[in-house]
Length: 174
Image (cartoon, rainbow, N blue to C red):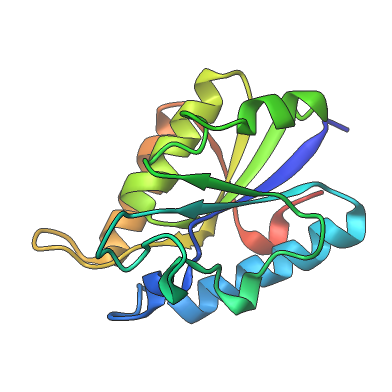
C-alpha cells in the first residue's frame, strides 16, 4: 500500500469563535474519527496551524490560535505553523513528508476555498496523490454563496481538475 499521511488543516479554536462554520461540529467529529483510525493504523498525522497576524482570530499565541480540543495533536505529532494558505510554502512540510516516504495525503480541515483548495493543489503539484475528505472540510457563508455551495463547488472542481480523489470520511482507507 502507498505510504499515506493525514494532514489536518487549520481546525483551530478561532475558526469556531465568532460564527460556527457550516456543519462544523460534524466535521470535527469526522476528523476526530479519522485521527483515531490513522493513529490506530500507525499512519503519520500532521497538524497545520495558521497564524492570521496581529488582531486576527488566529493570531499566534492567542487562544484562537490553538488547535480545537476535539482534534488536538497527541504527543509527538508534528504541528506545521504557517502564515499563508499553503502549508508547503516557507515550511518544512514537504521535506518531512519525503523523509517518511509519503506518497499519498489524506486532507481535511478548514477553510475550503482558501487553505483546503490551496493545499490540495500544492500537494498535487509536488507529486502527492491527494485524497480530499469530501465531508471533512468546511467554511463559512459569504455574500455570494452558502458554505454548503462552496464545499460542493470545491469538491467538484478539485476532483474534475484531477487534483484529488474525493473520499467520504467513513470510506478513507489507511
